[in-house]
Image 1 (cartoon, rainbow, N blue to C red):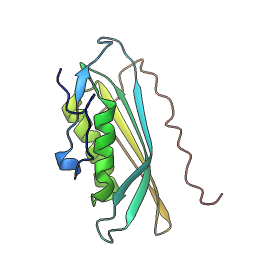
Image 2 (image 1 turned 45 degrees about the vertical axis):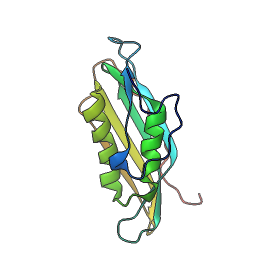
Image 3 (image 1 turned 135 degrees about the vertical axis):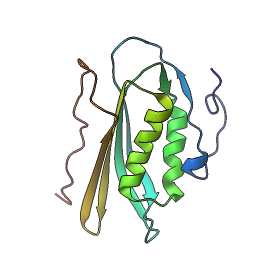
Image 4 (image 1 turned 30 degrees about the vertical axis):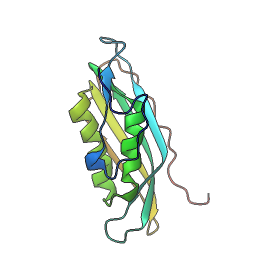
Length: 148
C-alpha cells in the first residue's frame, strides 16, 4: 500500500482539508483489539477571537481492514494549529473523518478542552456501540480542576 508520508519528509499541512491520512493493512485482521492515540497538546483557533484553544484528545478505535498510519495522523492533528473551529466541530470532525475513511469496527474520540472563559468543554463522539468483548479502558483524563 502506497503511503504519502511514511519514510518521507513531510511538511505540516496548511489546513485539515488538505491533510492526507494514510491507512495501511491491519496486521491482525479478524482480531478484536483496541488502538489508542493520545494528543495531550492539541491546538486549534477560536473561530470568534482567533485566540488559541488547547485540548487533550484521546482517540480509541478497533481496527477493521486498515489502521491509520501514525505520522499522517500527527500531521493532520498539527494542521489544526491555524484552523478556526468550535470545540464540538473540531472534535467530532476528526472522529467522523477517521471513521468514514478508515472504516474501523468502532471508534470514539474524547476532546478534553482547557477552559475558555473559565469553562472547560469536553466533547465526546463515537461511531456506534462498541463491539461485544472489546476491552474499553477509561480514557484517563482527569476532570479539569484549575490550579487544584
